[in-house]
Image (cartoon, rainbow, N blue to C red; front, side):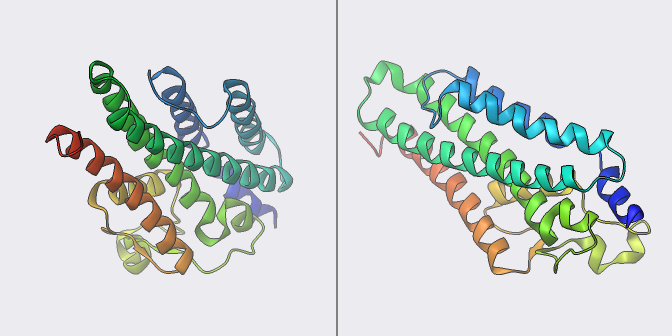
Length: 219
C-alpha cells in the first residue's frame, strides 16, 4: 500500500497550485466583471484547497490528505464553474444594458476571464475525476479510466508505468475549449462526455457573444 500511496504523492503539485492561483488572480484583478462569491469566501476556499495539496507532498504514507485534497479541488472547481456562469450572465448584461462606452473593456476583460477560468477549472475537474482521481489511485481502488490517452493505447511510445498527470488534463481542457471537440484524448464514460460538452458550450457561448457584438448583431 505504501508504494501505491507514494505514487499518488509523487506527482508534483506545483502545476495545479499555479492553476488555482491563476484562476483566483483573474477573478480578482480583471475589471468590470461579476463574481458569484464575495472575495473573502473565494480567498478562504483558495487557502483550504492549497493547504491539503502542500500536506500531500509533505506527509509520509498518509492517504488522508489525498482524500481531503480530492474533495477540496472538486469543490473549488465547482465554484469556479458557477462563477463562470455568472460571468456569462454579466457579459449579456454588458452587451444589452450597459452604456456603449463601457462595453468594450468590460466585454474583453470578462470574455478573457471566462475563457481562462473555464480551461483551468475544467483541467482540475478532469484531473480529479479521471479514474476517481489521485486519491483513489493512491489507495489502489481506482475505477475505469474516463479518458483514453494516446500513451495508453500505444504504450510502446510511453515510459514504463506511465499515467496522466495534471499537465495532461490541462492540455485536454485547452483543446476542448479551442477545438470544441476531442482531439488526441477520447472520453470513455458518460460523465467525461458531459463535462467536455459543458466546457465546450461555455467556450462556444463566450465566442458567440464576442463575435456577435463585434459584427453588431446584438444592439
